[in-house]
Length: 86
Image (cartoon, rainbow, N blue to C red; front, side, top):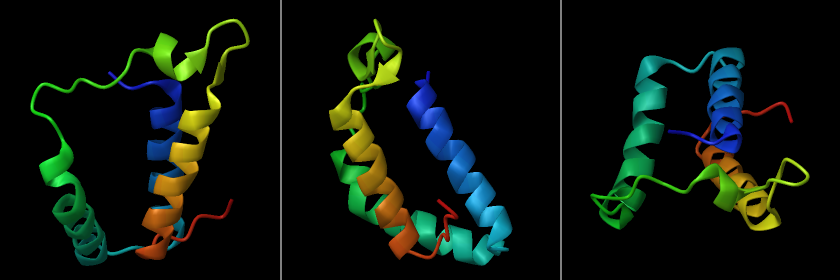
């Protein structure tokens, strides 16, 4: 299950890919680079974090460490060729 922050990343990346007119081949190349870098770091039994761990449930905003991670990953994907508009 995804947290709202992950869903935001999926949405922004899909929108940027569409606006950039990324071809299937280009997208596959980007995915291949990310998979090469991260595949060995993903534990088999890792189901992610609960929303209560990612979000401040009193204010309903993501915790700063996850906002920072969101930005780092988005920057990394942008360096690979996905042109985000924001």
